[in-house]
Length: 350
Image (tube, rainbow, N blue to C red):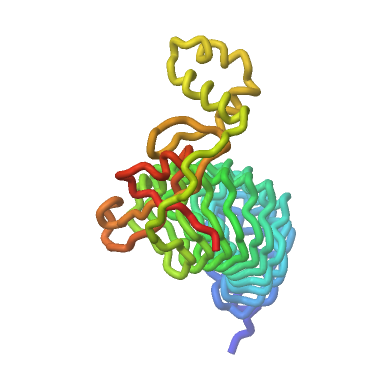
């Protein structure tokens, strides 16, 4: 039986004389990538998955036209530095290795990357330089040790799908809402206690998987998402039990009273307040954090009651299942909470 090295050399020679644009060295039992591959300067696809490769030779710098590289199921302990110079790469597969760190300089050198698969490694964090992958559409970091997702994820405005399943995430960054093209978000089997407010900005989101987390409810206006599939079993959702509050009114701080007045006046575009606000950018930034009561529709800034209402996926979101989920809602006062004919429940702490 021919040795793996001999088989590989023959394959490279055939590709060289045939001027091939692809080379398949999958499952060849090789430990090293032969340097002679660097002579295949026309290569656009190189498959090296299912081997015992622990590093790549610097000579691969010559593969300037390489668009797809599969290094899955090898023995890499780090992302090879040479990859940061293959600017034409569009698809990079590094699944099932022993990678712990993704070097910023490598990520920064892959501006045309569309697919990045880092599944089944031991990565704890992604570098902020991930923001340079402006063309990235598919990011998969399933089954790693991620403890956080960098806020720079918001720069990836071409993202269509992201898979963060089986990690150690306790939250997702608020900036995720900037990924307007996102259609699939997989974040199951983590330690999430909340989902970012503003998730309703993901107007194209069709699939959301947050099963097996520690969620108690979904964000405000979650039911407005155009979801077709929602997986949320195995969480700690609040249950609905009707209760009346004994507190009828509260004394609001002066700052809150003034903020509510200004926010109310700002609704009228002919009011003096509305016309003067643009001259006070710091005040506008502060008031930008305000919201509206779901009962009276009145504005408020920081003093509110956290409530919940229960959404039937079949009836309210036109999905196929009959599951009922809790969705967060904010009320401006106990007066509104105790008003009749609404279906908002207070969230009691035990």
